[in-house]
Image 1 (cartoon, rainbow, N blue to C red):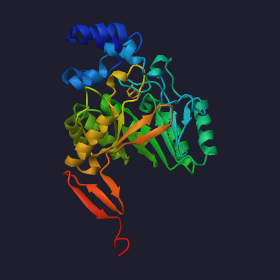
Image 2: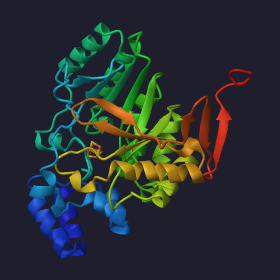
Image 3: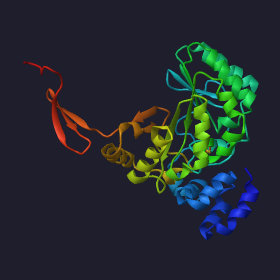
Image 4: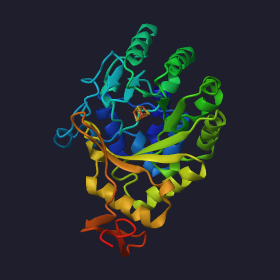
Length: 347
Ligand code: SF4
């Protein structure tokens, strides 16, 4: 939040190239941070890369391969704030405000718009749409960060959605336990959440350095509300694109009782493409992790298909079919042949 103050504080620590990036990049893609996340960035190279601008963000050749909205969220909008793509799920982007602007953000296009928070009138439009569409069982409230919506408004939105009989779950996507844990601990967000009955929270840790004592305390506060917490991670070149780093991250997440849910390939978003890895990189990492850790600590690796065609999970193939038999690959790479069923066909 204290952008100007933060900048003057950190400028002495910046390299020449970083200073140049602040000068050239922030008029296009702004910078914002909390004091907490800035302190973390000054101690962790990985966090620094997620927080500080880099000249690659505006590299005209590299970024020409990206789009502002490759997932076509705007095109699939049914109200000004609601996107409906999958039959059973809708996305409600309630704000474009985040206290920390992450350089890899897939909604960077929203940074360029004036600040918005969903209005009472628009909440009614969302509720009318969801009520009228009985296939919708899952509402994802996202942003920006929904934890910074005026709490009475967030409470009204959640409680109204929970009253719609066909809505089975309401998911809230937030990065505040990672970037601004004091907000979770000091605001009344937990007072709102503990009254809910259908809410799940998706947090967003990308690197083990982000799981600090304070961040863990914020997660614990959410857990005390009785809310299941899942994590999504984006695979980011130069930050977490190694099996060792992700193993450490997923183990640490498990130790704080947060389920690693998704590992996303970085979307081809303009201003973000320098973080993109080959699709095959994620598959290889997951293959390695299957040899090292329990599946409960392994997220789905998925690619969101450009054009708004939806997510495709891409897990490494660990079997093939040969006639009536299966050839299975065990955790340590052994190939084992198994019958499809017992007793085997034809006996
Ligand atoms: S918290 Fe999420 S929405 Fe906000 S800038 Fe970071 S990635 Fe984007």
